[in-house]
Image 1 (cartoon, rainbow, N blue to C red):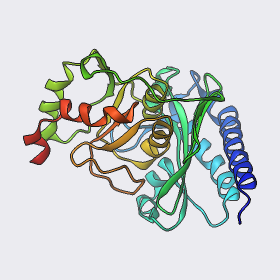
Image 2 (image 1 turned 135 degrees about the vertical axis):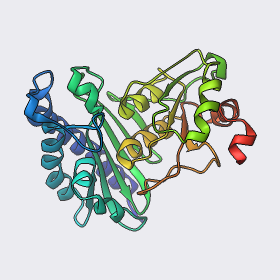
Image 3 (image 1 turned 180 degrees about the vertical axis):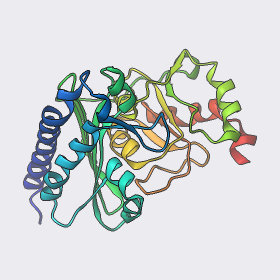
Image 4 (image 1 turned 90 degrees about the vertical axis):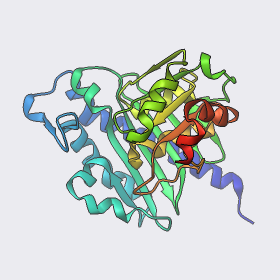
Length: 284
């Protein structure tokens, strides 16, 4: 029989190893450029709003061999690597072992000098996210999660949040990437919320959800580096993520049909979904 104590120790060691790697990458490549970027260290990818900096590129480049060395035979799917070679994303399948990396999530915030940016890593093994890390360099604070073993922020376990009625809840939401047929409905129904905002960082949206700062995250852009780490963090702290149109669980794959609703308390997923999307839109 396998020694579960040995397995648990290995997993704990992996959580610490990757957290340490993120700290080193931040110290080497990210924080020296925070609020200190030169013009030639900022460029655009798909649009003027889709920014990349030398911090993103160099941090991912440094992390790649370090992470691959922890899991021989694994593949790294990073936001900046995919920007250079889009075909790389389609290596992500349900058979292999993958590191999903967003070296600086919230690049726009980083460029503006806002502290609301973070670094995200998820380990996906045979189609399942098994471990995740979200590191906030400006706080030197890390959130980690392991499938079936819970989620932690700065070493403290994250627990299930209270059940908050829809009208009293707060949401992280941007309609920029929402399907056009849903925007009007969502915009109208969001008015009933106590508050909703767009913080322009998936990492911080999921951190806030897991920590009870917001009750839900509604996402319309389904890139794996934006969601794999955060979804596991919220689910392991008592929440739930699912596709708002059919309730399907999130899977870290190259393409996922949006939008996705993630909630801090799993029991509130269906009540929130009903309040957000009327049946005729959902079925249409």
